[in-house]
Image 1 (tube, rainbow, N blue to C red):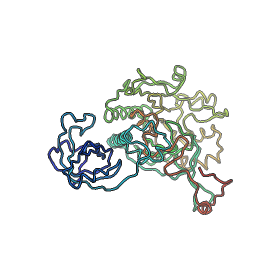
Image 2 (cartoon, rainbow, N blue to C red; image 1 turned 120 degrees about the vertical axis):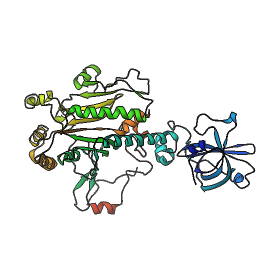
Image 3 (cartoon, rainbow, N blue to C red; image 1 turned 90 degrees about the horizontal axis):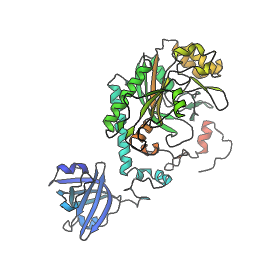
Image 4 (cartoon, helix red, strand yellow; image 1 turned 30 degrees about the vertical axis):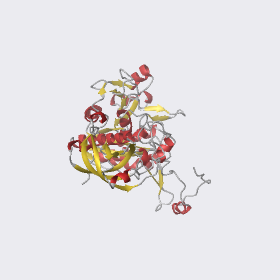
Length: 465
């Protein structure tokens, strides 16, 4: 029965069977050594000439061949032990070798961290790139973070609910990814920028505590901490005020760091809080970095930015929502909505970590008249309001509780915890900086018959990229 490499440390003198990839081969005189890699780590395997059948086969082995090895666990000679790996005091003295699959020579080395390799090439062969230990470690950390979040929230009576991926296109800030409907020609679904409306409707439904590891899609320019599709911890709570959401999120992050990244230390607990106005006046940014030593990769400086303005001006000077149009005005400032709207604060809040916006949230509007008023102030006609948001306004008429939530970005959190330069290093199959997938060659031209079936005519010929 197969065991993992890391398990051999408890099996000295016993016969074992291992399967994995050849991470390297070395010939030392009459001895052949390979490093065998599996999900448990790496172990040295030695083939002696006395292994009549295995030895000649071992001489043919090449990097990344998939093999099965049987042999005996033995202590390495004292001067040949390797303290850098878990199995470094042991080796497998092979008695049998079976090649399960051969492999072509990889286009780049897999025993380095990969940072010096052209990213386009790495992403084209991402299934090989993911074999390197750094990326395996990042994906395992990602799993640990999500696993912790699920358990933490489940223990506090939150219910995980999946919301639709095919939804309605509504103005929420970024461009939507549109999906044409074959059944309803000329109409489109939109991929969710976030589950914002659905999670609010779940509060109307009486669920009270919801969360989801949510996939989100925004058609905007990529950068180091942004991708066309990303993952966030989405949560919503009923019968809460701002302090309730902040306290729960803070507890989650503190305990998460202690559980999955104990080598990290948090600069200040409880997290400092700063108004948006103070942050802009003192730091010229709403994402200030309060680390004591910015050269310390293990320092985590969490902080809250609160009291954001409800409205701001866009590039054309028009009024727009500073966060999104569902955020509730601070009750202390509601009287200024008609007279001095830009002075109105919202019940919005950002959690900031080491100069990155880790997540945003707010207490939501739960009153249809207030929601319509905000939409009108943003320039939406009553017809447009009804067409895009009529379902929400109607829902609010059936007893919507006060509610609020937050959505920390999982990709950015893993990036910071793993000391990576961008979120692409924490995602299994990311897009390039310009939104392409070199491995799958996406986006790509589709068959004209598909376009015809969808009733789509291209304005001009699309060039292959």
